[in-house]
Amino acid sequence: MRIAQVAPLIESVPPKLYGGTERVVSYLTEALVDMGHEVTLFASGDSRTRARLVSTCARALRLDASVRDPLPHTLLLVERVRQMADEFDVLHFHVDLLHFPVFRPWKERTLTTLHGRLDLPDLLPFAREFSDMPVVSISDAQRVPLPWMRWVATVQHGLPRDLLRFHPKSGGYLAFLGRISPEKGPERAIRIARRVGLPLKIAAKVDRADQAYYDTVVRPMLRQPGVEFLGEITEAEKSEFLGGATALLFPVDWPEPFGLVMIEAMACGTPVIAFRRGSVPEVLEHGVTGFIVDHEGDAVRAVERLGELDRGEIRRVFERRFTAERMAQDYVALYQCLLHQEQNGKLDQAA
Image 1: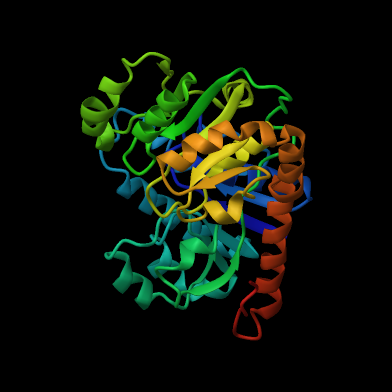
Image 2: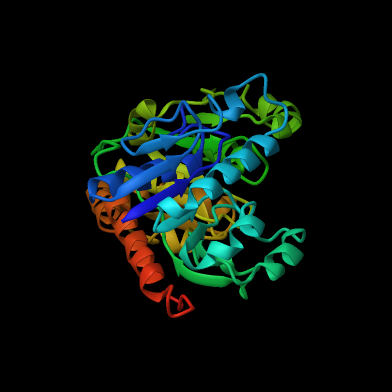
């Protein structure tokens, strides 16, 4: 099958540091190559892949100091895909909704995975206009604000099976990994760690949009005993960071679309303590891979119950549910459905 994977340009594929969507696109692309498909990756020029790489910018936009507005670069990417569209059986987009006006004529062989939150009011009129475009959710919870879109499946994320190493024993600290922002809850993680008396290691980036929140809320809390701020870490550093943790704290306060860090922790055998928001109940198995909680008091009690969980079983759940191989197989089934039904005029609901 000739497949185009279209990634955002903000980060490289895979990202050098933080970046969820681009990381998933990388895992999917390489798994499709392993399955023998002819894959072209549209991404920044500093991306690394065994697929054919087509780029419209030399490096990831976030790391290019000369870039002030990412929109023209992304529109140029969309145009390049349009010029080459007839070379592919399937066009798989990961750039939100930006390409919809251009690719509506190709909609029956176009698939769009929506990676972000969908509860923003500004999305409503646009999504209603393009409700005929086939879209994939990364959790069922993600669909809730826009139930009338043309959802064809939910495909949960996956990681390469051997990307992160299993750690049978923890190093006696709690971990927070991701982005410093109010919806991710780093201040809640600090309070939970302080209440249970365990060290907390924070590996996270600070976006410019969240700098004020970091300066006024989070930074003063970093002075508390036992709290260590590491900044952004690389993919190679994640295995030790997550695997050494007694648990990953995931105290989100927003409709989390998926939460890649949860399955990264599970791959290491590390349990997750997560707030009951968005996708969390679909990803975590309460009492098996971690604990789902409703507030900080629940999280404190969950830390006290971590000894009940089997790190080996957590890893086995990851291998059963969240590998890149499983994710690629799910998408290939959708691609085949697209090709089979293109001549019939409609892609039926797959899930």
